[in-house]
Amino acid sequence: MIIVTDPESRARLPFSRGILTRSITLAGVDVGIAYSIATEVQKELNSRKAKFVTTEEIRELTYRKLIDHGLREAAKRYLFWRQLRRLKVPITILLGGATGVGKSTIATELAFRLGIRSVIGTDTVREVMRKIIAPELLPDLHTSSFLAWTAAGRVKGRDSPLIRGFEEQVRHVSVGLKAVLERAHKEGFNTVIEGIHLVPGYVELNDRDFMYVVTVGSKRDLEARFYERARYSKRPAEYYIEHIDAIMEIQDFIVEMAREHGVRVINNVELESTVDVIMEDIMERLMRKMGRDVRG
Image 1 (cartoon, one colour):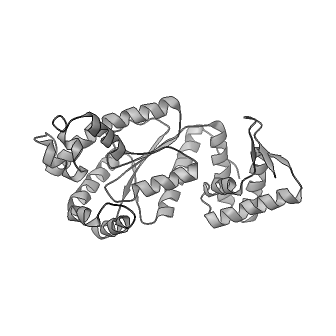
Image 2 (cartoon, helix red, strand yellow; image 1 turned 90 degrees about the vertical axis):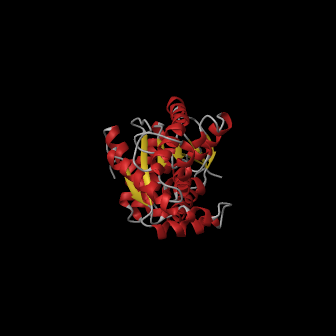
Image 3 (tube, helix red, strand yellow; image 1 turned 45 degrees about the vertical axis):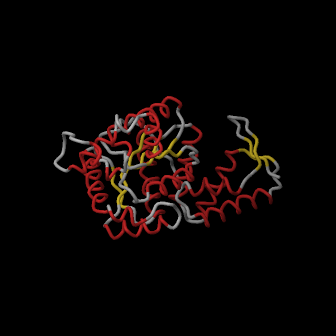
């Protein structure tokens, strides 16, 4: 057994190909290739008959293996994410977007790659608020986002009753989201928050928050996603397809708000590509904020 020691924390853990594989995929390397490289690292350590190695030695060996495989950019990203973990820089990723665009799947994949344990959906926040606040007080909380207009009553604002109702629900849920964000900032832990109620302009961000709006290209794409989602959940596709025009109108509104507030909009064509774009953007922005570069 090979024991990996961390000189800073003095932690001692058995070498794990799985953990190393995840660290390598964090750099945007395909999981199959990442596992192969992790295996090569293990074999080299075994050939040395190493019993104890440091995290720094693992880092240097993995970096060299990435270079040997011609993955110079991935090697650079690998060093960066390792450095970020060592510095314990807390980040919060926020994923907004209309119903059915793939936010929760993207959030889960991001959390896995980054080793983030906390993934929170705004629907969960809304559900907690529903238990506390009676329908008579805030009726829009107790219905779907695309039906909130039927419960919101007369609300001043935009011409579209649908968007007025949705905005009202977003305002109310944002109170709970503010509390979640404040706790994350105060405690300094990493988290991913996803949901339709994350609308640019209604969420106050700090310099360690990274917000994105996820979209689909057309009603046909969205319809296909609803049918796919129905295969693995109890949410019937027909219910959402019945309201697909309303959902697309909400998407247009969220995109409009994103552009107004300078939040990046990502068309979610394929999961891996979307996650890679977000990871790359976070890395570049963090590197600028940290005022340094990671040399490959």
